[in-house]
Amino acid sequence: MKAKDEGGLTLRARYSLKSAGLMAVTCAAGLALPLIIGLISAQLSDSDSLQGVILAGLLFPALLLALLKPKQLIPYTLLIWAVAPELRRIADWSEGVYHSVSLLSLAPILTGATLAIPVLKEIHRIRKSYVRIIVLFGVALAYGALIGLAKNGMGSVYDLANYIVPLLLIPFCAVTRFTAKDIDRLLNTFANIAVLVAIYGIVQYLTVPPWDAFWMRNADMMSIGTPYPLEIRVFSTLNSPGPAATFLVFALVPMILEKKWRGMLSWAGVLLVVVCLLTTLVRSAWLVLLVMLLVYIATSPSKGKWKTLLQLSIVAAALFWIVPKLPGAEGLVARMETLTSVSEDHSYNERLVLWQNMLPMVASNPVGQGIGSVGQSTKLGNGGELGEYGVMDNGVIALLLTFGVLGGLFFFGGLGAALKQILGKVTSKNSLQPYARLALAAWMGAVVSLLSDNGFPGLKGYLIWMLIGLGLGAKEMIESRKKGTPYAAVEREITAG
Image 1 (tube, rainbow, N blue to C red):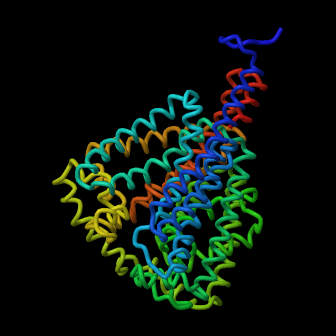
Image 2 (image 1 turned 90 degrees about the vertical axis):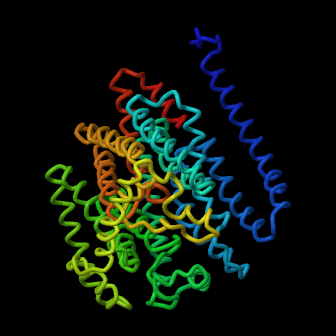
Image 3 (image 1 turned 120 degrees about the vertical axis):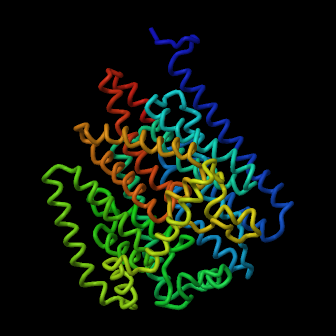
């Protein structure tokens, strides 16, 4: 006798109806999207129309993956975060017109927002431990958004999206339930994308492609050098050296730590990423790299510690031999030598003065300035120019200035709740512990990076919550088995994810 659900339908019939409904939605989206693109493009200028077509072309695959293959969505969005700024530069250069605000800037946010589709579909499967994290961050973001809308206008909407999209990875990983093989494949893809970013970055350092030079001149980015070979701080396919270094560091940590996460080029890929990271001249990235490596190693079994330390020693020795032989090595070496004399470093002293000046301001305004008051979003309400707090080289101050005391308590409470869940996974002895240790390393790297900037919105936030989400979500399937869930049911959940 066939098993029936409460509505009287067999499981097979229910699955068939679900598949048919999903196919109908997919076909409807496939038919509607070209019409929507055509209608919108007809109302735009030639420049905006080109950007809109490129944007739609990037977004459509994300919609299909969200509906049909959610596990492939994270690698795709990683690729879009990596290449969208370069596509924007090429589009501007091809037109001969620089746009301070571009539709293509929305590409990573919109593709990332498609994570909400699988989340909404399976929201009933999110456990209470995840709900607490989401609620704490949700209250902080709601508070910051209300203040931001009143004070900062539309800039707060864009900034809010930059906070929300990365955080979607927590419920997404909770309902998708990646297996160890899935995570290994994803981290391998991440490594391969990072190697491509590194290769382009090295080419950029040696030649400076014309579209990158065009963008540097028009965007007034002379603070990162001049658009000539060996005189540029590399930003590769990203929009500045900071995000480029962040992307490389968060890929480099897994690449160094485990062979299975190293990508197609293995150690050759590691060296390419390290060399490109050097050319960005972002010293804070090396601090984050060191902290993440040490956290992972410290929580590893004794045998794993010595193996990883040996590998790090080999990489360091290779760099000691390779770096002085690189073109423009004098500037790279001089920049890194400032790490040994921090008290005499100009950037360090500027950050110290910023902390001393801004802390009393934060104390005198406990309500906060709201979301949209700090960072790149200030361009939207300021004629394309950065606002008063457009550059904020201290993440703690940026968060307190944005959320105030009350919102800050909820935001840091969310970080504490996430840490509690991660530590619970780290102390559990099972085959998935490496992913939990990587999540802990990402959490610590995120907190340490607050010394230089607020990395939770945007690209860095996406990378942070990706590694944390994978570390937390990987255990879900194992717990289901321990509670006696039939193996076939677990397999159906995996397939559905």
